[in-house]
Image 1 (cartoon, rainbow, N blue to C red):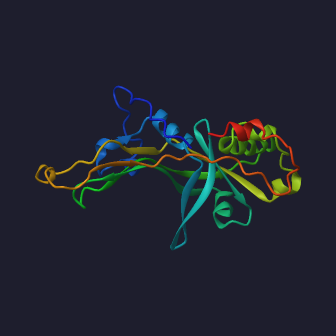
Image 2: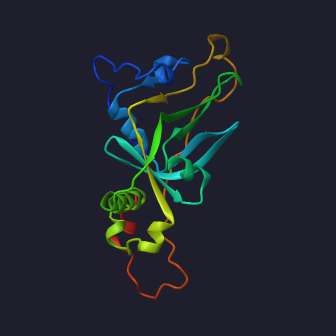
Image 3: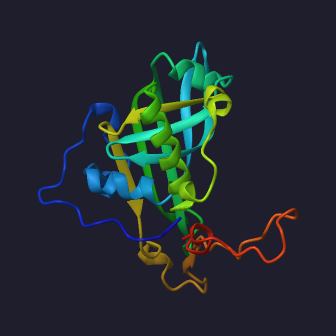
Length: 226
């Protein structure tokens, strides 16, 4: 939702939380501090959630929100992933923001500027009714800040059809690439354009529903949508 740069790394840098989360390829682009992990999650709202369902790996795109040091995921009670998560199930959650195309003078050195985060943990069900209601509001407000106060909250029937899972953010890693292409010195004199094509995410003007009464004002949560 935003391309705000990550906060500066702590000094000394935070160590990897586990061997599984240790970035090995271009390790200099890795961050493991809480501020960086939270910043990448907070900048988006769609994650890809991976599970191992028997012998079949499955990855499912899901809307999420961060609440403190945990990630909230919600879905239908009929969902395979949500059924597993209801009893506690290991997951791997990834979020990536592509900020620009990095076009080099050689095909080999083409790249992208990006911010990505991967977290591994056990997803567990949020069962407490008050925590469940608060979690649903956090999800709505993460997508459109202030929206939960403008809409009807889920009723009992809707709540029964939905599961809310939480995943701790303790075992996470961030990886970031910024800047121009890195060309070989031998290619610098080639008559080839090189540089970065930014890919900002820019929301368009709100489009009202066809059945919305004429003259209804756009509410603050929509007007201020990032």
